[in-house]
Length: 178
Image (tube, rainbow, N blue to C red; front, side, top):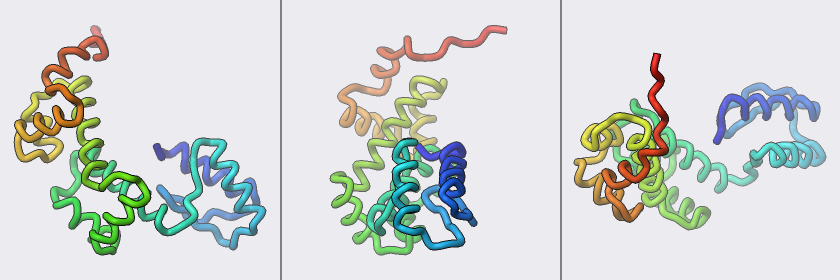
């Protein structure tokens, strides 16, 4: 998971190996100089030791961007309500067939299945930690209906959303009494 701490770590490592960061954002870092082979190796090792990785080819970078976009769509309540394939194609500037084939080759899973799995994980979180109805969750995650959400949930998890919520009640945080 990439967060502010990860961005600060990348900035710190770049500075430590003698580079001047110009811009650091999720998945990208621009520096003033060209990296020497030694700097490149030190950066890769430092990032790996911190649980991050240096993406070194265009295919890996594009797949990372697809995953990042999907996570934003799933977890951002204000994400665009647009067809996923169209959104990825427009956002990334590539034909969806190319993006899809590349993603499947690198990840061994289709974009659609990856997207569905993350949506179901989000549904699980909402079932456990939010006091929302299935209809509200379906709307929040842009399912066409609660029944569509339920059938997809059961297909992935093997249980219904209500059964999942009931068997996991002990995982819910206790309410804070004041």
